[in-house]
Length: 190
Image (cartoon, rainbow, N blue to C red):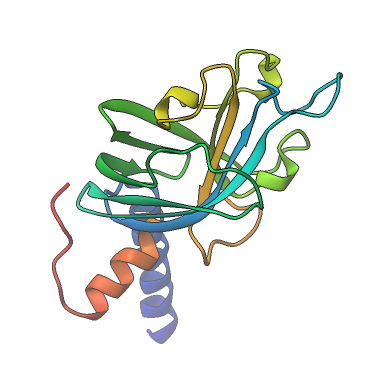
């Protein structure tokens, strides 16, 4: 009898975990980096780019609305004219993150285990530049999403859940819902 109850409970917990982990959510906290290069691409066959900058990114949303903050890390001139962005329509799934800021829809795809994007494995990433080859393009994002960045520059935005295990499809919903269930707070309506 105990064995049967244990087996049924195990199946129920596994099914619940799969359901929760595959569900989209509008609530999450992520961190990462924004990389900007005047080369117009990630790699450059010519001389070094005249401008390169890296920013820390913190992104938090509850029920689809939140903020994204950018803080300059590198010792260079700050081209950004805005460092805090109001986020709407935020939705994260195991394979994609979408959001709207400054009136533009942005999409970042999950990178699980890539040799091209090795430094961004286990992140949601978007990248674009006018000189970038196809293997350096990801999602839907560009320099015009960041006021002050010239349209000829290359940008890479990569964010992840801070406690996310490496090289695994992100199980981002379970930790959020687990904390909500633990505190007996109903989940937000997305």
